[in-house]
Image (cartoon, rainbow, N blue to C red; front, top):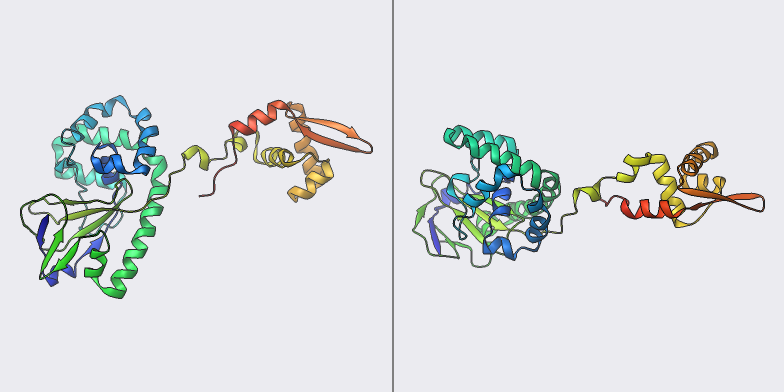
Length: 299
């Protein structure tokens, strides 16, 4: 286990922060913690296909030690007034602190843009939900209870913070501690202890699955226009006349007629007379188009 000297004055300075850089590094680091995370496995299964060639060497360096992430890529702004820095802000701070990492910073940016940028909004939302729970505990029960709730076995006692896990040297946490939630871990704690720096304690949350970015975009609307997309999806539920379609979409009959005409001219519907009515039916091409472009998932 790890023991941190953490008197009451420092306990009172406990704070929480988010880090897109920390998530990127944890996500590509093939540690036991990452491998056990179902969310990370699902994310990496897709993201690894998008890794740019410029980041191959960086990933090799990150994975040089499977048991720990490289210290030089620790979130650089944790504890310095930034609770949720942008990825670019973190890279600027990293580069300012270590100018010799210029090539590494470029590789990190390309890796983030290719693999994590599209998913960060969803991940960040889950992290914020966790922070809401921690904040409520912090306000109602104090920082000791907020810390103890991060993981079984984590405890503050007699001016010391006891962190379960591998044995490390005792550490002085003068200035407080930054607790950082991670969606890519599985029931583990990762203390980042750098002499002269505010200690960081990364803890795992219980995440929900990430939906691919394509599921959050209405690709059908991009292809044929939003009005026609709505009409086509409505007709997929059941065939309809123009007036019935207008009623179901809550639009005017002329607007529904224009959509139906455009869809028919595109070979996506057939208009078949049924007595006094003309009923619009999907064609096989429309069925295939809808299957390839499902309605976007709710964020």
